[in-house]
Image 1: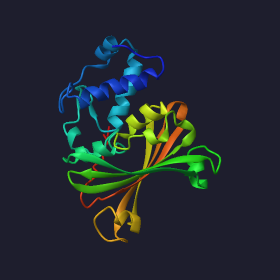
Image 2: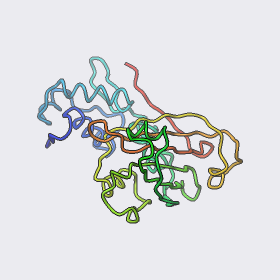
Image 3: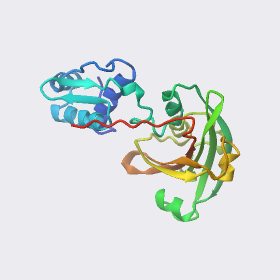
Image 4: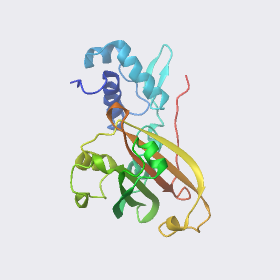
Length: 243
């Protein structure tokens, strides 16, 4: 297994193990190799493996049983909002058992507001790309997603952006950036009239809002997303292991 120098070793080990869980190499309920076995296989220290396993345990992917080894959480496939899925809206929909699709609504440019500039480490008034999309679960519209991205990061003509791609693919293809981590804030809000135009229900009813801040390497903020989430149709289930 090749370890790259561009990322921290612990993060790479975490990604490798997470990919194995997602791909079914380590099945739910199964025991995974020991720290020493993983250390030998991946060519890293046991301390590095221990750090990666601690992160996976904190996010509910694995359960560490004292004196009995480490196991994949048997309920891992039931959690629709575990590590990675909470901000990847298509995966969130898939985790609820539906087929996701994306309707590209609009893309434009405008100056950053004071709040946006603060979050994205910009000067107020610097230009943003504003991307609005509507996510469907089968044929039901369920998430209205708005993302703002610094225009200075764009590495292709704005008209070339395919808004039907996953957000990670958009960053990689048109901004030459990879998402390192995401911070998500979940809160209840009232459905505004513009959201009611796309989602079912009356304006003014309670609805969930997911605010996401995307970061690249060196903790550089890449985008701010505000997603209005129809929790009458989809659900979030968060898993965290207790030691």
